[in-house]
Length: 212
Image (cartoon, rainbow, N blue to C red; front, side, top):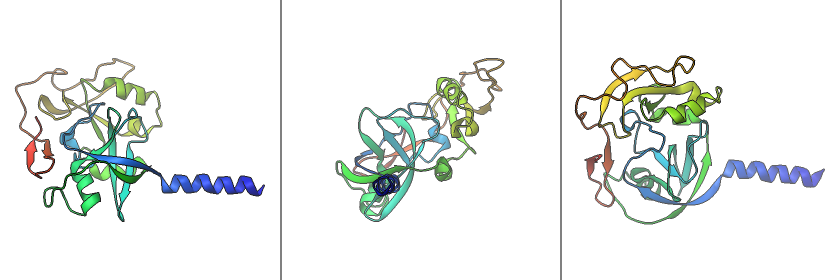
């Protein structure tokens, strides 16, 4: 009885404490599932090596007495990256636009937290996704109808994560009728490049530049 209880406490402590990972900075916004950078705070994103799922899209990263909650909406090639500004703040306590630093992997504590903790980083009332390029991800989440993404996704007629092409208009999806979203204008259409609305903070300089 007592050993089992002890193991249970150890397991709960591990969940609360999280895990340690070598965290590196990432200075160009991207999203493997098509989350639109113009509809989120791109300075608060995590790029983890595992695929993006439909519930665990918010992580807390802690270091030096500081913590940030970040949207986990991109799959990296193997690293545990976070937005450069988030990395800069956790290491130095200041924004990368104020006091940019450079550096490699820093061991930080990471843990999954409820997706609601990251709603503050969303600008569209939900997780904004590309209607033309995120349908596989959305369909997989709709197959889990109680998942957070299934209940909180939004589709926009914008083609790319950095919001260069398309129309900034919301679309609807009813898989019982079609596997293609319905938008006010033709799905995937465009009328020239949209104004720049996604910006990166350059590594090492702190300069704010439009996403390419």
